[in-house]
Length: 352
Image 1 (cartoon, rainbow, N blue to C red):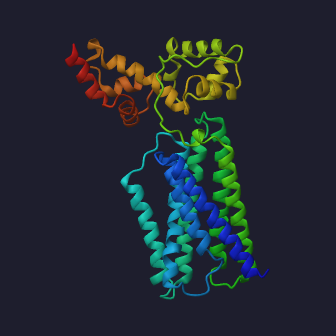
Image 2: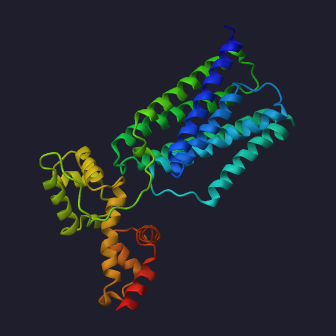
Image 3: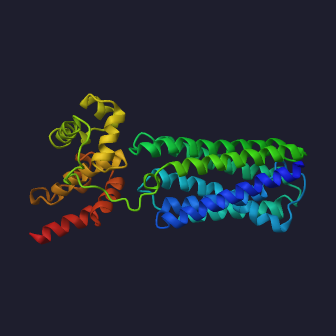
């Protein structure tokens, strides 16, 4: 088999796997944002697999430019996908689409105007620096959200998916910057296509081994702290849950600044992984910060409904409950109650 045929086979395999993955996500989890973004990322990656070449020594054909532009814009989708996959409260905003459109448009302009104008190196370097920036952003946000993630299998999956995609994308971006204008030959492109096919196969295999509900929950509702817990299987779990609830209700440990699950595990004298499992599997929370905020919001609701505290500023109530600023408190409060803290207080006053 010739190098050209081998490269084509690798590209075709990558595109086929990515199309199947996108179709599977849309079929099974079409109402879940993370799954829709995952499908969009798979389609953008298919465009990358079909159009990518190491080194740029010639002008891009006009029909090829849209594929390259979509491939470049896919890095924004990757960033949004990692946000949605590991942050159950993430929501798309209008400016997210604008960022994708700007990156895609700039890549398209580089193919049809900047590079043909004699600035191939400038175009390729600028585009790949943008790619590296979004990869760094995705990695940084993934690492920052890691401690609060309570879903064990999702914690393991994020390592592979983010590292594999980011490592491949980052190395390719650096390679493109280094060899722009050089003729690297068919061997380099064949190797690159083979590596991409392996990465895609690995991601698809990893996602198939994980329960889809762990990655793409059908609905993410904040559990109430007053709800009855699930049956406890392991000896001593119920006592630990009771001790945890005493820390929350009596000591109000959620008020402490920068409280972490590690600190809470130390107070209960248990390993951190066991506390994660208890809060996730027995109390129904997927994120540690949501667990803390549910207690903070319950305290804030009681204070806002108390006629004796009618003159206490909302920000004072928020900070007394453990929030560090008003903005996050307002968003978390409205997500749980459907109204702002001020509206909630007014409704309670009018109900008296």
